[in-house]
Image (tube, rainbow, N blue to C red):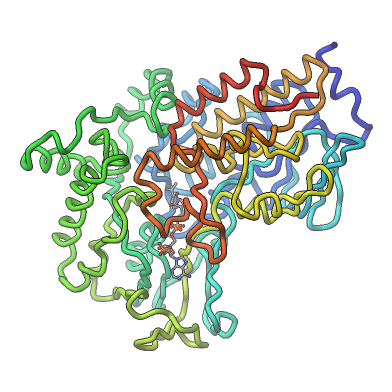
Length: 542
Ligand code: N01
């Protein structure tokens, strides 16, 4: 069959592909399909510009926890050679500038419609097309539908009684107003102490008249040790980019770090402490890779958890506050570990208070503040750093209907079921970039995104070259994959954090299922490559 056989069969108005989202994933997918394969592709994006997560997350202190030199695309050497990062951890403005530069360089904006939120998508078996309806009621048709909507994009605003009555301003960190929020002279309440709350706390405290942090679960955090990137470092990185990228792809989590080969249990107390101290000084997520077994051996993990608890006691001057800030209910790194710039130090400031809302829960929001079971805290601004309906929230916010009228929300009523995190049985030609069941949030995201985009693009090329028009996951393959995802999680300590968003525990009523694939990025990429090499084993191609 001719290589362009499948697209030629499409009715006139239908696109070959629609991509939802213009973040890292959507931009690269657009480039690959439009410029690489020559398909007709339409992008749809709810924001007013490119950026994805970085378009929405503009809260004070928002920066990436991956280091700038490897939190970027690897697909274009010209791009990686011409771009200069200014800091060890890129700040949100700088990442938006980077993605804007990518959009300019590859002329991507012209293929996206902005301010266009997708409301529904329906598979039409007779035509083998997806009909995609926007919130404004327009319907576009396409053969392939690709979601590039992010894993952490559906903001979780807790249903606290009285929120509507609040007379001040309230904001969610993942929907930060582009014009910013001026905290000068204000009494601010911040709810949530995940990566976001931990990044925002020191910056808000420095500006506000007073900051009250409402903590439900105490968290481990490692100092980021942010700072400017030297010219010398930049040169070295650029000279070695190929090797750095290869190392990132070969690593379990997409970070180009060498994991320690030892267990902390192999060392005596003094040497172990010296290693942890060195890791603490170096800062960042590298701390996790000092030893090989922190995420699989509870006794090994206890040594890291104890070390961090000791640091919190050293840094925070008031012992009662230090105790409240000390995590005891989950092992280190079983929830996504935050990294910070002077988070624990911030609780030594006169204008900062900590409220433990496990001990004294929030009862209500009143017109002038927050009422806990213990007292009323008057506030001018409330910041919700309460995270996201992770991994499935953004997909289920679209009314997706597959073959025979089956709705995605019904297919996933007991938790997401995917094959490789890439496809769902009953939803032909729908690809979910970094979908549940793929390593995604357990990795440095651009590595996971590039692997998915490359796989999907190669798959569509295969269909086209073989005169095929449909790919659909087999239900049995999806069931087996979910079992494997569960096995992979069970082989680690990750499921021990029972309040983790990896499990959906942060959203009331959400099924408790460990959603990302914990078997490692390199292993996962190998499985995907094998599946393709075996003629897309586990998929039905017609
Ligand atoms: O969200 P979270 P996040 N009442 O879910 C609390 C990525 N990220 O936005 O732990 C009171 O982690 C909740 O308490 P608990 C990164 O992958 C990346 O901080 O559920 N409190 C928790 O303390 C990260 O993991 C970067 O008991 C409530 C907090 O709110 C992910 O995004 C930067 C509550 C939410 O923490 C999400 O991080 C920032 C309620 N009803 C984030 N509901 C990078 O650098 C929730 N909480 C790339």
